[in-house]
Image (cartoon, rainbow, N blue to C red; front, top):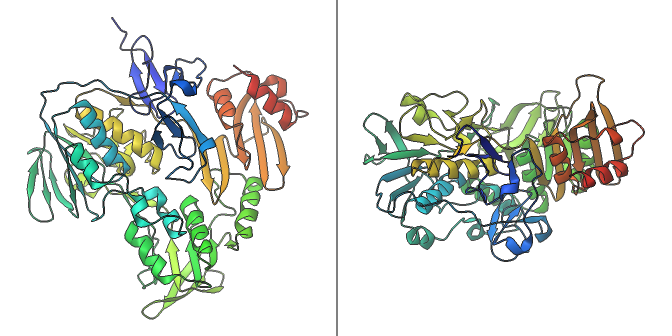
Length: 499
């Protein structure tokens, strides 16, 4: 009999499998057994075994014998795809006709619906989304802003995909009330819908700081397709635009507007860009790249007022600087859409509190994606939302699955430049050894402590990302290159030969 106390965690998506040995393939992301932490080396499958490919930048999975030329989500080239074996999850009960209601048409909700249908071929699935458009890749909104893709290319699946999978897609419907005791929800049209299992994938809404004037015409967040199209209607060549917020979304938005020919100023309240992912020196490399696109970056910049009559005309900073603006975007983070769950009495902190099965504090209710809080944090990222949605779908369908969290590493592609960061970013004492290589347009930095790799930042050349992640995760001995006299080239050779 398998030992249920022994667990194996997928290092790709965080899925947790219980048993004596890891599964042959992860049922969530398709990773092979070697990508489960039995604290052994996790080697990728060979291309000949693969029927699908995962983008290492954003996590998108492409089905096919070969990877796509470009990732439809982040635009990464085919060289950024790695093979993965086909994922599967056993059917629980072909005769099970339970009704599963999903609230939210983002990646978490759609992934949940797909997982339910994969597990229960005859279950009744209702998917509600407040937006009137077909569910789309929100991650691609900045590419839409940049003019790289059309509205139709944002769509996750055509309408007939939902029909083929017998998923009742209800667009333009907002859920107003949840009654956990009666197992039912109420729509904004007054319709009551009962459920056997409910998955809340309500997403998040933009956080708008209390800046006077933020209600003016021309001021917007970048959260929905409607937001993106409204912003595009204001922007043409030489339009002055101010982007408030220098995180990843703010950077991508600024870059998209610059590609449309706008005059863009990016405001960041911290001393440098991406402080959660980069140190100051690495940020300088990124800032130089941003400046080369014609974007003006102002750090330690705080907005006092957005000025104008009916429409925005300028932004006044706390230091007295006044910036002309016809369009202002605010990308200062998001907040979980937890009001429905909170009013219904579910446990809510930053988001709807869930356990490893994505189960909430109420029976038969699960939550996933940007509205869910797992391990004390709301991930707020596309990749964990996809995986959490799948886990929630499996559990709602009766196929017990667990989520153990994603590895703490960031592989990103921001404004066309690849970034990787992992582990310790800012050492808190002098016990770390730093090895750095700076080149034109690139930066590589490794932190070692007690002979182990404690952190890494790679900009431009991220070819060592996988080897660095493995060395850190498995606590491999790096004492041979952890000394102050080692070079990055020697570190690279060492990491690539560690097994």
